[in-house]
Length: 78
Image 1: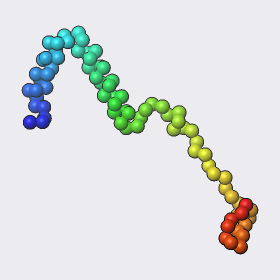
Image 2: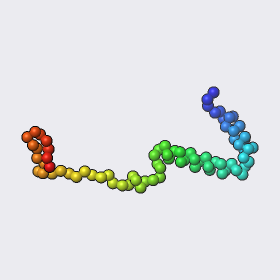
Image 3: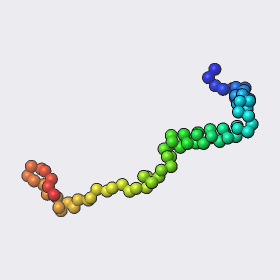
Image 4: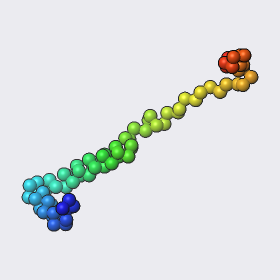
C-alpha cells in the first residue's frame, strides 16, 4: 500500500502529459532535476562556497619551556 507500482507511475505520466502538454514536460523535468540536485548538494554539505573552507586555521603560539616558571604554590608564570 505505500509503494508506487509501475501502473501508478504510468498513470501519473499520462496525467502530466495531458495537463502540461509535450512541449512543457522537458522544461519541467529540467526544473525538477535541478531542484533535486541542489537539495542533494545541500544535504551533503556541498554548498558550493569553498572560500570559507580554504581559510587556514589560526595556530596558537608555542611556549618555550625555558620562559615558563612555577611559583611555590604551583601556579605557572610567564
